[in-house]
Each structure stands twice: as structure tokens, then as C-alpha cells.
Image (cartoon, rainbow, N blue to C red; front, top):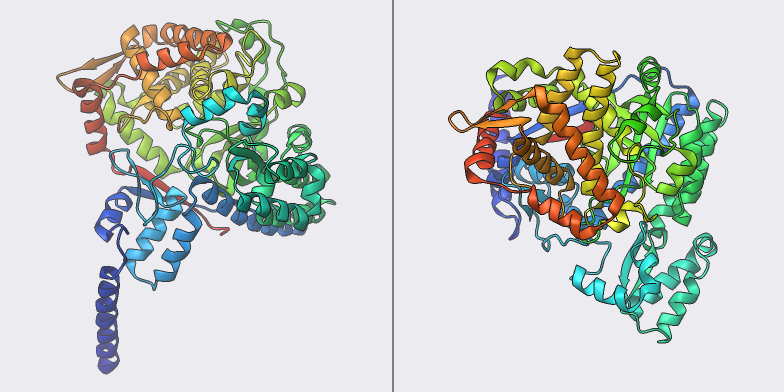
Length: 595
């Protein structure tokens, strides 16, 4: 036994020496293990493992196919975010021999969904040997700037709808690209048939009949092999659940077609109007905040969710009376809204692509025409929203920021209901400019900033409205309002262009400070929440945000952002230093037992 122990110890010692040598032999421009540790030591790991015992055999078979579709979607997302993402991952996997150093780098790639990390001081830098991240990610040509695109769009206005389409890449006009894309249409006749006019356009460019330096290419053609594989998996999953859940089957088969046509109307209609049993899935590209150039390109995601029936019924009952809330808003009264919004409380089975992480909720679809005709669906991710570790992190941050007398104002229910009404807030308020333009297009690239800020402020407004009507207790209202302050706390100065959430949160904080619902004590570097004026100030800011959306004035939108994104050393940086030193975890790595 002693001999075996000596052999084992010697083997382990040899292995450690080998791993140490391996760690030192990584090529240039890979982060060191110490650099990776700076991030991972500040990372909370969360494992999601919902109970799936109620699923039928058909639903279980569908889950397996949807997980495979999600894995493909994950790769498409990574490729759309950086042109070297997939190659850099493959190179790292080839280098990985079990050493901790490369294992840590693989963890970083998983957590940041690609080779670019957000550092502790909020810089976006590569941790693998790849080029720096560009605002247009990999859905615009390398080196593309807003100035270059604006000149082209001004000279060729007929190209605007295609080049700024929500599901098109802007492709450089080169013979290699054109021949590749024509070859894709030859290989996949379904794509050719579902994109009438595309072949003619590509042939015209190839023949030199048009001198446009770029052209619009549908996502399904750009990423055809992956999209076609997902198409087959979704149709297969539809067959699996046809007997148990015909509404879900209809949605899956329509969404399969949507992905190859890049037109989501059929699937969106079935998704919003369907009444599913145990499963739901958010599939496709919806959110545009990854596009820091124009804020119009959606990016791929897939979320597979298990419904909590009891909690879903409870919340559906709480969503009555939305028209009265809409009519009481500072702007947008009189717009008729759908009263019966499909809302569900779900536990995440697995997330992929843009949705992977600690996302708590969503309301979709975003297309204003689809939401006008069919409504929207709210998905609340309960096992993320109520995870004890994640709430502990939120409470730790809140406690570090506010005076001690207010530290207990935040309870678990406050952030839950603040998030619920945030999602409903996307549905309320202004949905188009006064002259009929789409908000995201009119306010580009600030559309996401204003839409998220509106939703935050509607959540605060609605909670006070419910409290006055006797439908929300004083204690819960205070927790929701405390959650609103938690929402605006920043560890670092945001990057205005590509961090719409953090930017609009800083704007709220500065507005609250200016108008008295927050005050800052320079002696203690803590905030005091002034609840007596809280609602008046939130309502005033909501009115300004809704007015900017209604006007659709891009310059006015930019000016409002500039006014309220001040970051001062004596206030913001001091508070941020307190948060950074007080909060144990700054990052979250969400993993899934199903994977």
C-alpha cells in the first residue's frame, strides 16, 4: 500500500511539473494563468438543474433535439460576434491537455461567449490571440465605421432596408464572397426559393452591373450549414411533441421555416398565441444590443425552458388592468393594448448564444408589427431570479451602497416584481414615433438605451400605481423601489456605445441624484434613498424618456444621454470603489446540468 502511495505521489508530481511546463509553453498573446485567475476568482458559478420529471417521452425526445439545436446556435452566435472566435476556440482546445491554465482560458471563453473579456475595469480586451473587437462585430465588414456606412446609405437610399435589416449581414462585395454565396444557393434550393431576388442581386454584382461596395446577405445564407441543421432538428422536435403538445409542435415547425426565410412572423404568431404544456423555447435572433455600430442587427440565441404552472397562473392573474396603467402614463395614453399578455414563470433547462448567462426575463417579439398584430410573450426565468447565491450577491451590493438604516429594504420579492413589470414595461408606453417611425430606427444607435430605460421606469411607475390601488403592499413597493436603486449601481464607468443597459442605469442614477430621490454622503460614500419623492422623480424621468421616443429625435436623444452620463471621481468612482471592494463576485458563470 505504501509503495502504491509513493508511485501515485510521484506520478502526481510528474504531472504537476508537466502541467507547469505546458502552461509556460502557450504561444504569445494568450492570457497568463494569473490574468485568468483575476476574473475567475471574482466569478460565482451557478448550476441550473430543474425538475423535468413531468415531461412525457415525446417531450424528452424533443428536449434532446433542442439542446443539439442550441449547441449549433451557440456557435453561430460566437461567429457573429467575432470573425476569429471559432478558430481561436479550436486552437485553444487543441492546446488543452488537462492543464489548469488552458482550462481556465476555456472557462473564460465559455463565460464571455467568445475570445473577448470584460475586464475588472470594464475594458473589452482579447484573452486569446485574436484581433480587437469591432463595433460591428462580425455582421459588418472588418474596419466598417458609422461614417463610411452613412455615406453609402446617403448615396444609395434604396439599399438602406437591406443593409440595416435586423437579420442580414453587411457583406463586402468581392468575387470570392459572391461566388461563395451563389454556391450556397445552389447547394440549398430551399434557401434560394425562400429568398426571391437574392440570386439576381448577387449575379448583378458579380457581373459588375452595380458598383456597391457592400451588399446585404440574409443570416440563413451566411450561416447556411448550421441553419439547415437546426431546421432539421426543430422539425424533428415538432414531430416528437405533436401528440402531447400540438401548439408547441406548430410553433417549432413554423420557427424552423422562419430561420431559413429570416422572416419570423409565422413563428412569432404561433409562439405568442400558443398555449404550451410543460416546455417553451425562445429560438432565433431578437436582441440588437450587441450591434454597437447601428444597434439594428439581432444576434442568435436559444433558451429551453420548463414551465412552473402554479406560479404562472398566479402571475397571469396579477396582470389585469394594463389598459388603465397605459392610460395613466405621462405619454402614450389612449393607445389600445392587448390586455391578456401571455406570461409564464419558467425554470431554465439551458441557454445558448446571446441568452446564455444570468438573464432574468424577456418579452418578445421585438418587431413592432408582430407585437401589434399578435401581442407579446413574457418569460420569467425563476431559477435564475431566485437563486440564493445570486440574490446574496445582489443584497451584498445593495448593502454596500446605501445607508445602514435602509440595508434591509431589499427582499427577494422586490427584484422579482421589478423585473416582471420591467418586461411588461416594454409593452406599454410609446410604441412608435409621433410620425409613425419605428423607435429603434428613429433613435439609432440609441434605440436600445431608451427602450430599456423606459421599461425600468415603467416598472417603478406601475408598482406605485398598484400600491395606490391596494394591489401591492407598502412593504413590497419599498422592496421594488430598493430594487430600482440596486439596478442603477455601477462597478465601473459604462461604455456608452455598446453597454445600453449600464448606460441607461447610470443615467437614472444621475437623474435621481439631480432631482433628490437619491442623495450621496461624501463622508461615508453611501447613498440615501428619499422614498418620499421617489415616485415623483421616476415619473418625471419617464415622461422625458417617452417624449424623446415619441419625437424620434436622434440629436435630442444623444443630448439627453450626454447630460446624464457624467462620471465624477468624487461621487461615482468613490461609490464604485466601495462596491468593488465590498462585493465578492463580479461575474457569473451559469452552467446547466442538462449539458
